[in-house]
Length: 231
Image (cartoon, rainbow, N blue to C red; front, side, top):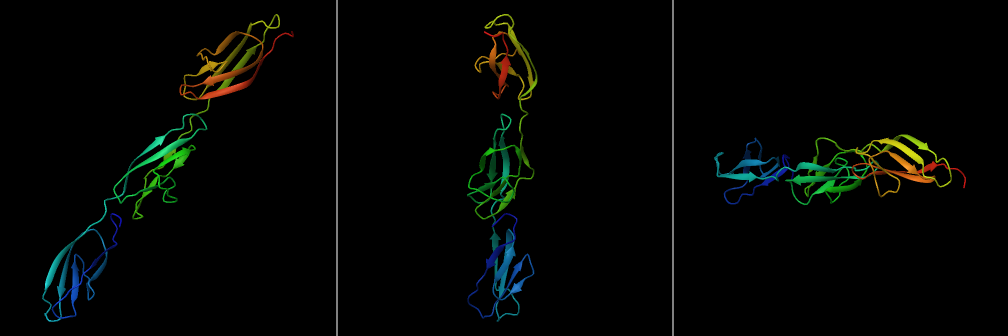
């Protein structure tokens, strides 16, 4: 049932002549009286038959071809990466050979499903495998890793409070961040972003800081307070 297995069977039935019959197979050394040859691998076999009326002379010779399915192969594995830290990725298994339909697994030869695509996967190491309709199993030779990208993180932050009068706009906020997918941008409204990490001429009060990387992953800090004189 699976390529490379030795589970094939040839059954030969003779008629005519004088029973009992003797059967033998080449390649191989087995001789029997029932014409059943088991545990055969793919290949070409010659069956010879004699009956009781001969002196060991071959009466019948026939060649039988034992076929097998093509090997079940995992051609490749496609990984859908985690875009933002803590997100989810995917794995798709590309298969050929064997006997349709296929079932897929990402924990080796453990649990199989009818799909070859696995979504919503956390970062980690997975072992893709496939099983065909004859229960033949192929396991991908190397683990497949879904990488969790580095988080965006605050390296430093500095606040200059408003001086003068309540409502003045002479405060400032300096922030330095790293991580993510580089090209860090900053915003105080979540709409307009800038590469400059200094916000000048801001009023007092609570501020929400948005930090975005080149793939759109955003770190939100909503606990920033710029002090100002009382009203």
